[in-house]
Image (cartoon, rainbow, N blue to C red; front, side, top):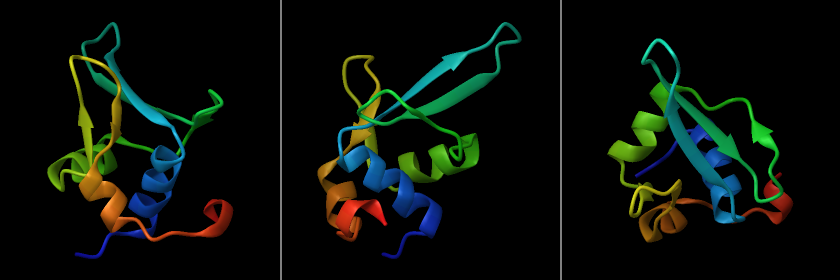
Length: 84
């Protein structure tokens, strides 16, 4: 299964120790944010991309925690030096 370039970037970030957090704003709309392992926010994650990753089972949440990469996600991501 091929994954898009945007999905590839998110999975690389997660494979290096990042996380995806979701929350609701005051209007009860779902907001997803991707953070690197250093705490920097990655701005190119939207709700559509989040749902695609979740549907492909490349990310998962455990016990209400943030979303992390799964073994399937690690298998699908292509290794690149320093995420370039």
